[in-house]
Length: 250
Length: 250
DNA sequence: ACCCCCGTTTCATTGTGTGAACTCCTGTAT
DNA sequence: ATACAGGAGTTCACACAATGAAACGGGGGT
Image (cartoon, rainbow over all chains, first blue to last red; front, side, top):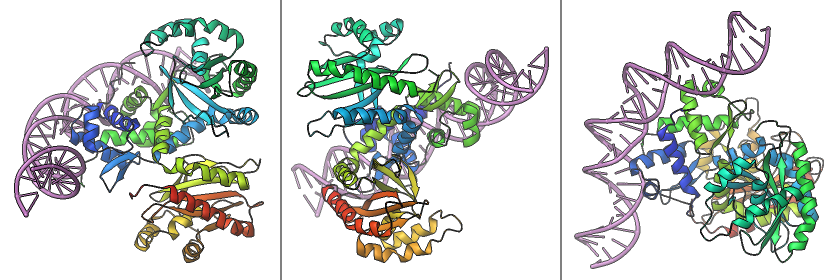
């Protein structure tokens, strides 16, 4: 498929994504610098996107921020994605039973994205934002994706993973056979200090991994033995979710 | 501000919004018909939006659906919006205390959008989707927005509201002084049969209503007296949320 | 085998998106 | 007060990029 993409649209998406950075509000100049376009061009895009509700304009300082329509799109995505909706009862069961944060990730290129999550009630708890992007080279869920991926896909992926220099990723690969064997993966302080997690794969009807179910919390409550002891519970919950998936597609 | 908007971008947004309809997957032709463009044009937009992660392509049937990046944008919006995050503890308290669905709406033009929500545990419960759009001419939250709006803004708005023919909207306006007086509004089967709700305004530092906090559920549990008795609890929760808002902007 | 529908490609036309330069405004330093 | 800097919004002429009509090709159903 060599369809030519539309430059103006792609650039507008750049503008939209520039709001994913740390600042919540941006003006035309700042964005123009970021995306490498003329201020006039950016301004027209901002006005267009605002008119259509994807952005809002702060009349006070003449800056722009994300608009409520993006939430509507996300709501629709989560509704139609089957997964988030179907999985909710199991996510809730797990969270209630162990009172730790439970989340679901799907893979997006070389990263994973949180599409569902219920947090623990403890005051010290693992915190995950809906839509948050996390790497594929570390963490229990990441290992689940890697472990249950076709070999050729994995080798291709591993080479393109943006692994930070100095990260010891070798252990990651050697653990994969064990993970396939056990049906779940654990991690302790792997991606972030002090966090422990167990994760298991969610399969579609073709046996392909479409998501990872993860239970995570502070290492103080979730030490290595505890994580292993939770493995089968998480694996079985993930399996039950898999059974709910009707979709045969990739 | 008479900046010319960019046609291609605006059309691309049309394409994006066409996924808000009932079908979760759409092909170029279906979209083309919907937005009134040539199939070729739509295809280029689809490819562009997919390349940038806002859409996903189903390789099986060559159709498109919303992509995970929209969730990332929404997550960012909800994070930066302050409100959703700041309000969460109060929303949770209310939900836990009365075990009914609690939600927060912001106004967007002639509609309101749900930006935060926790559902009741009852098996019969009010169901609200994140990002769901509801009208401004009916419902407790709608009346809150109308009641606490500057007069000239309200009269301008009321004329442009897309009230369905046959809807008795007069009662709506006469109730507003009482709502201002009480600090909360109730509704019973107003927008949807069998639903009862109480709502109260959330103010910013300028005293402008930026959102409505709502508690709602089946009329079987929430009859008129019950709703009135919950009024002050909801009003006070909304007031506590208002106090958390640091933002001075409009 | 036929047809119809739909996704994709090609291509010529012109309308449209583009950036440089300009104005206007606001806030800050001198 | 005045000068200055930075940023928002405007104008304009040019080039090329977005567009739609038409053609292609494959898949599914009758």
